[in-house]
Image (cartoon, rainbow, N blue to C red; front, side, top):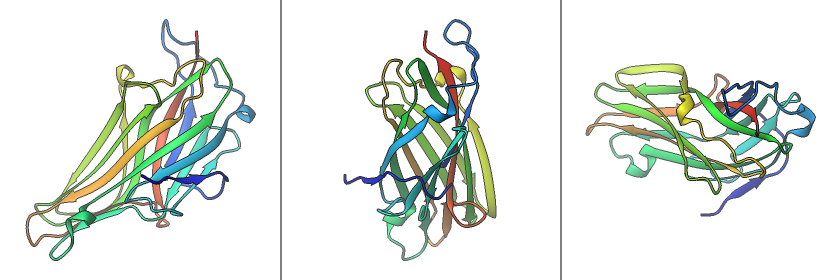
Length: 213
C-alpha cells in the first residue's frame, strides 16, 4: 500500500484534544508536557477515503489539539452504483514527538458529518488505533439507521480499561484505521460522509497524557 507523507503544518480539521489524566497507581495528575516540546514530526495516510493530496494537518500553538482534514471521505450506495463506493477507509499514521517521561492515549472520538439514509438503510463509522509494536487495539463504532437526512455530531468514549497507551521510553507512531460504510437493500439509496459544516471532512480525537513511572 502506498502512503502519502505530510510534513508541513497547514489547514485544519481530525482534531485531537490533549487533556489531563490521573490514574491511581499508574499516573500522576499533570498538565501535560511543555507545549513547545510537542510536535507532529510527520503524518502518512493511505486508503480509498483519503487519496493522495486529500489530507492536511495542524498542531495548535498550545499543543492541546492536532487536526487532520480529509477532502473526500464519502460512502454511498444505490441503484447502478458499484459496491466499492459503499465503503471507504483511511489508515493514518501519526508520528507525534514529545519529551521522554510522558505517555499518551486517545480516549474520545468526535465525528461531524452528513447522512442521507432511505428507509431500511444504515450508515456506520468505525475507528481503531494502536501504537507500533503494541498488541492492544482501541475500537470505536457508531451506526445510524434510515430514514434520516441531517448533519450529525457524535462523541464516543473509550472506558479506562480500554485505553491504549503509548509505550514509555520510546516515540512510537500512532496508527489510526478509520472507515465509513453504508448498507442498503436493492433499489434503496444511502450516503454518509465525515464532514464539518463548511464541507471539510473532520474527525476529532480526545487524548490523555500521563507521566511514566
